[in-house]
Length: 306
Image 1: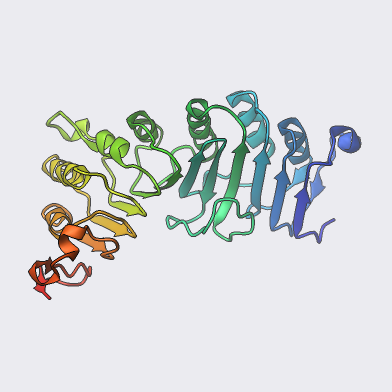
Image 2: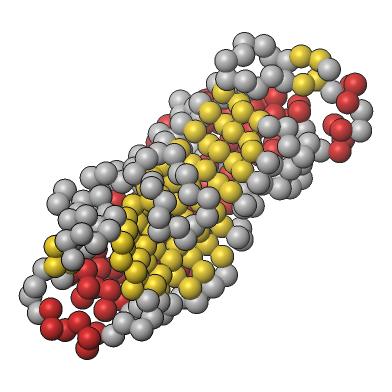
């Protein structure tokens, strides 16, 4: 087996068939990818305990049933340990949440490149874990943070979130409690009321603000509701006054944004990047009366007229 580069274990595997490994460690020095799909966690733990994995192996796991709480996660990642550990090179993580499915991915760079969540062969994804029909949504979220804490500890600098329903303020505040060193947050396909509320602070001190090291906020495919652009503007102004300024704000394929709303963001954000996708009809109906902004990071111009 020393020359094996890829391993895939699927539903048919059973614990009785591999118990003859005893205390043996099977060396897999050339292994690049290992995927275990729909296998009970106790068998996954047993397998990893008997495989000697290279430090740069990519791991993908898919569970269909309950994993019996955080203690099982600790057993799993203890069994997966390789030289230098996982946390030493993991810089970013992504979460995916929808009804009946949730998951976590860990990346080796601060720019998450996976086009879709379940992608064991993505060169940047170090660990991918997906749960299907696992628990209620309220229980899933703490489990996901437990995984992050076990794997990455305090090394995480970027967080990519792709939810299919509105995540509450408590979700984002939990994220700050677990990862206070985050510098980049990317949110795709979400209502943003929860994250705006979490960013807001009633206090007057820097210590009152969540995500104090946040440098970049990226919003993709967001359908802004009435009043939300102003709420976001209020948040970036508040953070600037508290000394925790957001330096880059990116809008990609977002809807219901107006030019003047995006212009206001520049009052407190050094670099505002907007692709002008889906501007509000109020702006589109009379293009000759709209002032457009050159949002290029290298431009010093505030506005130009069409």
